Length: 365
Image 1 (cartoon, rainbow, N blue to C red):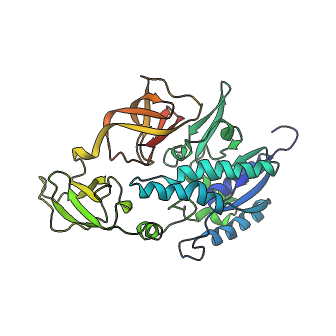
Image 2 (image 1 turned 120 degrees about the vertical axis):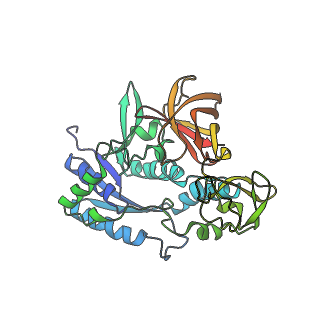
Image 3 (image 1 turned 90 degrees about the vertical axis):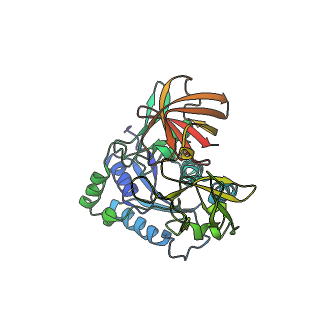
């Protein structure tokens, strides 16, 4: 730390990760201010919305650590910059990733702008990722805890955002974070990790979408022979590779291993409102060795080198897959994989890595 105490605004969610991040920065000598973001208001009394309890937990954490907290409402920004795009993508038959948009537009844009207006030198979050300055550029790094690494969701951050960001948990494992919280007497040490849609919470997803995108029934057909197998409530509610919730009965063939092969979503015909399915996890229709991505965002501001071997993932819970990146134009690239990838899904993010360094990525087109 410099001689003059600097100010960092920490995004406090009410969970253990952001609590420990704030505690560590306070111990390092920063002037720490907590900030709780409220970003969802449509059904605030709903049983799935935990913002009220989260705020109670944030106040308890702040009191224990000894920091001030500000509460800010970004519901308008969230609806305009994240949720409206989320609905538009689903309506077009794609499967967006709201966490990626939420990070780039709310947590590291609206939040960052607000923190700077408060006089902050830096912002910090409880994300499991790292940032470093290397040869005059800021790099986004994978976290030490590979099982919790969240760089995939942060790949749209730019140089200006990373220059102002601290990730105190970069070198820590989740189990140690919980132990640190417990040792400090923070009651959230055992609090369950939040899942579900960013800031909206855990809720039955199909029922939630139906509030905004009404059902439109259509046929479910077998991709291989066009047989009609059943009926869907709307293409919006299905995604490539989906297995559950198809309700296809009495149409299974007998697999070679003596078990029934499951059905998986393999495609959508938006014009005809037909959902196509195939039988078997490893059906060729679910395996692709290349993709095209657009809406590119490279952290350095430059595209990766052509014909270099990188690694990429097309979904969060997936091992890095060797690949090459070929620029098509400023906003489009083609990524070719050494091995076919399963259920590459339009609307999801493809994120490119060089070892531990996250280079950025784009939206699968």
